[in-house]
Amino acid sequence: MKIAKIEAGGADVAIVSSSEIVIEDVQSALDLIATVHYETGCDRIILNKSLVSESFFDLKTRLAGEILQKFINYRVKLAIVGDFSVYSSKSLKDFIYESNNGKDIFFLPTEEQAIEKLSRLE
Image 1 (cartoon, rainbow, N blue to C red):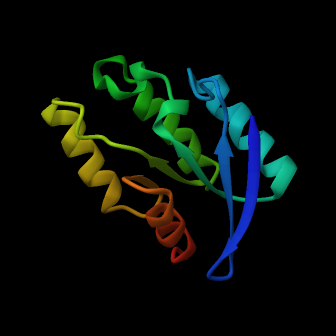
Image 2: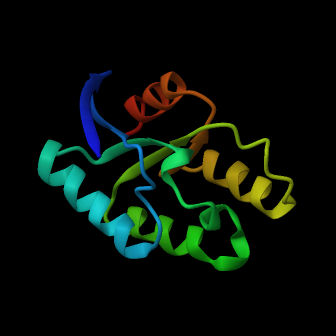
Image 3: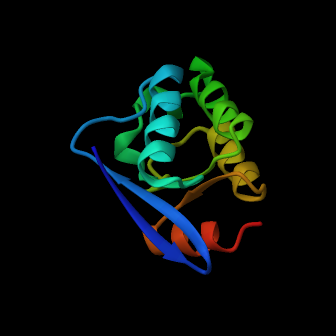
């Protein structure tokens, strides 16, 4: 796993990249939050959806809710970047829509949009 720290709009943002899945379960999400905070001090994280287990996107597993609740509890803003049109689930589309209208978790098509969004948050 590689973590790049950038400064955008006065905010520090960590961009995580890896050749492997980084978030598979709640514990791996907590490990990511701790590692990013320890290595960069950032509380804003961007990662590609390829770094997140596919079971996250199946809302019946409840994994998405459990994982994202950890990010909210630890006051870490998260942007997951990728093409979400490949999912046909209406409930997932609603979940993504609601998340994108919030202030903590975002599902965006590009890293540039994620940087822009996270840099403008309070």
